[in-house]
Amino acid sequence: MRLPSCRPVLFALLFGAVVLPAVAQTRPPDLMPLPEPPPPPPGMVDDATLEPQVTIKKRGEDKVEEYRMNGKLYMIKVTPSNGMPPYYLVDAKGDGGFVREDIGTGDKGISVPMWVIHTF
Image (cartoon, rainbow, N blue to C red; front, side, top):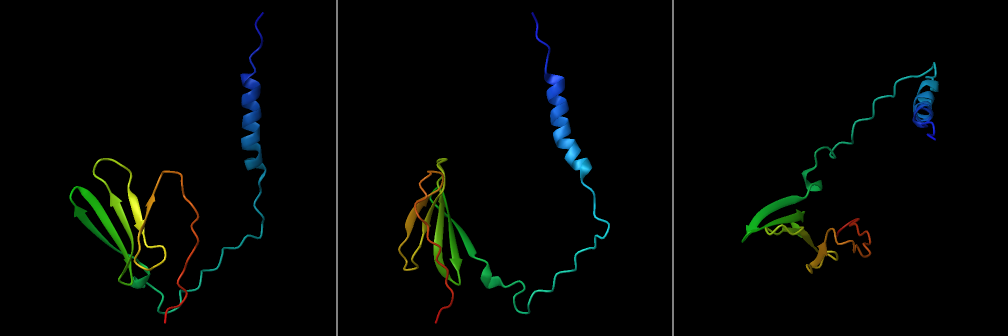
């Protein structure tokens, strides 16, 4: 004995679940366009000091990218030539001591946010 196929019923249910809510939405009659955003404050447009300076070097077969902010080296990305995933050397405390961080190992550890608010 062959059972009837339930594919048309499933298709109708899925079609109704997707299409009917989209059709039922109506646009309110009193829609108005959003006002233009205000211009950015003076002195903050295209500030080159906000972007890190990246220097790319070759050490042997490996590619080394050095990231600097305000002239201070804070991160090094090393991409090995043998196909291994890249790893990072990060100066987490700002004292010049770099710690290796591997990407893709799943061991993220605890990363505490540390921002420089003001320097004297």
